[in-house]
Amino acid sequence: MAKIKTHDTVTPERTGVININKSVEEFIHSRIAEGRSAQTVRYYIQRLRLFTNWIAAHGIATWDQITLPHLREYLIDLDADGRTQGGVHANYRAVRALMRWVWDEYDLTTRCPADKWRCKNRPPAPIPGITIEEVDKLMTAAQLTNYPERDKAFLAVLVDTGLRRAEIMNLTMRDVNLTDMSIRVEHGKGDKPRTVYFGRDTKRLLRKYLNQLEDVSQNDPFWISRYGEALTDHGARSMLRRLYKISGVPDYGFHAFRRCFALERKRNGDDALTVSRALGHSSLEVTKRYLAFTADDDRTFALRASPMDNRNRK
Image (cartoon, rainbow, N blue to C red; front, side, top):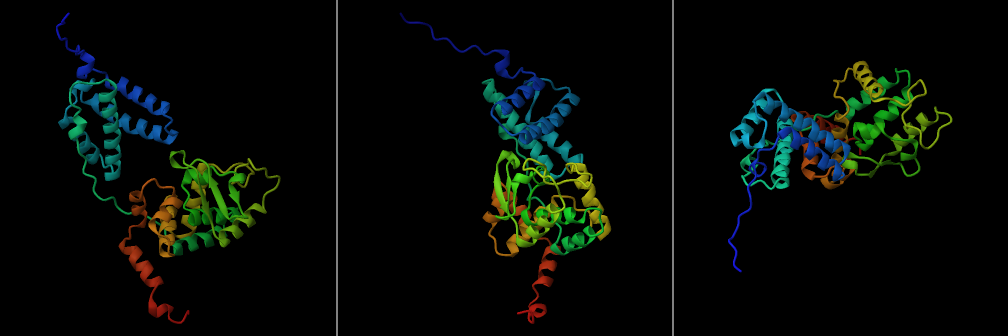
């Protein structure tokens, strides 16, 4: 028997009458369930908190109230707050990912405003970096600290491996192999393991540091404070600030050593892909920021590679 064709019932939920804060919580839980790294989950939590605070201030509670002009205004406000272009774009990506997930998860019948939402991503500025000459000054300054062997070894690993702050701080004795001159990073960014290598000078400095230690086991933290305890993140930051101050080198923080590593590896013949793998990058586009030259870089490398200055060194 023929039946009258029926249509799917369009519920209020399918038109977007969904609480935004509730869907943000569900989105975060979905990222965790998918096995995303703790760092990725924190990335979403931090960015989406800014977004939920913004919509609350504008009296928006459900997705059906969100329009494309709202999304554009949100980016304008982020920019006006003094956030970097990279920061603005990171927030844009997080909110866009959330909205696309909501529209797919709830099978919404309306078009997702994020489909037409664009964020102009200007070419990012080069990552600030420290020069190898400035590293030499920090090494000299380390002679004046209370723990010179450790401080010089720490600097050497930063420059010679390009490790991230969290990666170098989480090293254990098992991770560092002096025979192979290698370091195993078990939990890199995105929980991606990799092996990095260091040179003979770094090996020498690491050996001098390890010779200062007693009763060491493989599971012990690699960096030890002068009180015999694990070097904390705060302690490492204080050490670097002290070295910057003694040496007169501007305080570049931790991350500048990664750019120094990248530029020196490139200068010494490595291609971009090799540098990218050593840095643990997921994309060459990220690596390009580390390899971008500034006017200061041009001057530094020109002076170092001057044909006239080097003509008698052959």
